[in-house]
Amino acid sequence: MRALTVTPGTRDSLRLDPDFPEPDEREGGLLVEAVAVGVCGTDREIIAADYGEAPPGDDRLVLGHESLGRVVEDPTGQFKWGDLVAGIVRHPDPVPCANCAAGQWDMCRNGQYTEHGIKGLDGFARDRWRIEPGHAVKLDQTLGLLGVLLEPTSVVAKAWELIDRFVERDPWEPENVLVTGAGPIGLLAALLGKQRGLDVHVLDLATDGPKPQLTHDLGATYHSKPVHELGFAPDLVLECTGAAPVVFGVMDHVGPCGIVCLTGVSTGGHQIPVDAGALNRALVLENNVVFGSVNANARHWKAGADALSSADRKWLTRLITRRVPVEHYAEAYAPPRADDIKVVVEFAER
Image (tube, rainbow, N blue to C red; front, side, top):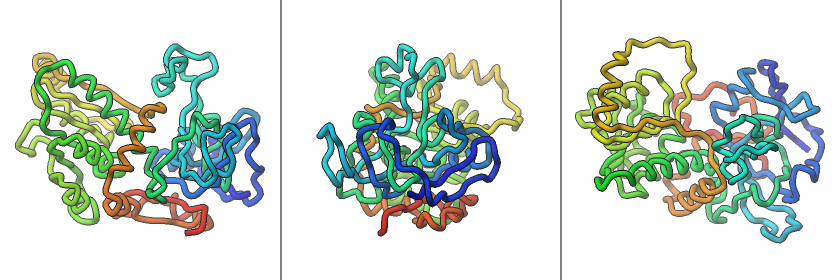
């Protein structure tokens, strides 16, 4: 069986192992044949040895947390042969903490959770993988390869759920949202914003390539200027870049009673001048909310599956800008090209 593996802690150790063992039944009763995995910055950071943790007793980790596969067998009968599924990435810690015990492992408090392809669990970049049926999410069969977008969609589904909770504090209802960053997370966040009937604005540095047109075709407004030059104060913000100037810019320019959700992870090591006192004053006096959101639990994965099922297939197809056969995996995990949005590695034949 083929598998894409790395040695955590060893830089540039990614390889295609042609004789990787078949998945052990202890990984779960549901056996799935891989169709594809998505590539994201997390994968490249693991390859660069920034983090990553192999399963206990192993020195190599199977990469891949953005999954898509077809069911081969399910002894529980919850799924049938050929069902299109994705595997939930994070699993609860063994203690478990109060949140994990309640099924909200995305909010784990003690850090002992595990994650497929990232932390302590082999990932989905292999010909076949196993998972517990309760950690698999069924997708609309008509999505086909587009189902590989579920993991990033689950992340923004959680972000939107949390925004909705904060919105409930006021009789006032927001009318617009600013999404910063037009990568996969940003464009999918914009998609869910349009599905909520909001006036969506997307900000990104790119002035050509697919991003401006994808935003336009979604029915949203595209901007390639600094936040302070937008000419309006957004009601809601989903920050998807992690770029420090953008993060502080949206915090400083969100409207009264506005809500800022931070989903981008900053790299650190960059210093920018910030008037912390003025920012604090504005946030307090305008009753603003700023919060971070990462990962997702089963509820968000199912919400993401519903969002993809309702989306325009032609628009979603354009998010996948490169499809790379697993034999040419190095092309997929190389530094992204200027016009890349989502790159996927295909295991099954097209």
